[in-house]
Amino acid sequence: MSSSRPSPSVIAASTPKLDAQLCFALYSAGLAMNKVYRKLLKPLGLTYPQYLVMMVLWQDESQSVSEIGARLFLDSATLTPLLKRLETAGLVARLRSREDERHVVITLTARGKALQAKAGKVQESVFCASQCTPSELKHLKDELQDLRSRLSGEA
Amino acid sequence: MSSSRPSPSVIAASTPKLDAQLCFALYSAGLAMNKVYRKLLKPLGLTYPQYLVMMVLWQDESQSVSEIGARLFLDSATLTPLLKRLETAGLVARLRSREDERHVVITLTARGKALQAKAGKVQESVFCASQCTPSELKHLKDELQDLRSRLSGEA
DNA sequence: GCATATTAAATAGCGCGCTATATAATTGCA
DNA sequence: TGCAATTATATAGCGCGCTATTTAATATGC
Image (cartoon, chains in turn orange, purple, brown, cyan):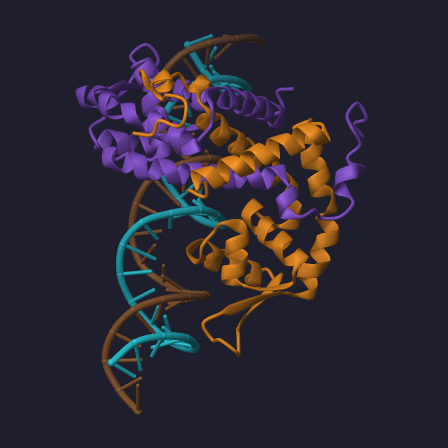
């Protein structure tokens, strides 16, 4: 099965060492990144996924749950409780759309908008922690985007 | 603060778009990878973190909780319940060390060892799904390992 | 018009991964 | 010896992220 790509047998002979595995590197880099964000976002009262949702809303302050989900590759089972926490924190409002009552439209509150200013240093701090040059950063980002889309079957 | 690296002001002007962010690419590639593994590991009755623990044990079949944690960058709060599930599944045994009763030594059972054979195709399948050449894969892995260690303050 | 299908969001339940804390065993030092 | 510090594991509680299912609203086909 599958012959248009380099033979998998090179890899699969036996279970490889952890050090040799891209997936473990990806997994543990993700955990490390999350830890960095946790400290930076604590003063804002946000988790990293909540911060992602806020970024999506700072770009476009009124979106349905599914629009947010499409941008973040997350579904309602993850977003619904997360958005309720943001609502409880007074950062967003949740309203049924009048045109189509199946949609719940998420809107930024004044506090939610105001938070953007406080979040300004977060990106800068993570950039410093990564100790990447802007071009390294862009390359790695592009490669990871490609990997994500291939793993998601968007090849 | 911190001047030996390229200026962060290039990045931090305002909140950047999601597409431009390495961290979001890392985060969502990790989720996508986990999804691929979930399907592949379901027949084995393992989650991805459980699979990582099994790989560590396949390399060295008797290790303390903290040794496993050091290899995977995970601590006891994550590993203890995970290892109990592997014990319930009959894949590992948990025993207090006699020399130092603070240590809990994890050992593979016969079933745990036997599972390695069934897990053989997993790496191959993920490799196919990633559609990377071996050299792309190695480069990306190296970059992610570097990123992880820098983010963890091991610079 | 009405039953059926589709869509959007919510819910239930599970397994991480974390912080903070607790418990127990060992070490170290006066 | 004895008592405080350290170390290894475990526990409590929270927030994702997932699958599977449910509820409600809209769209479609006869």
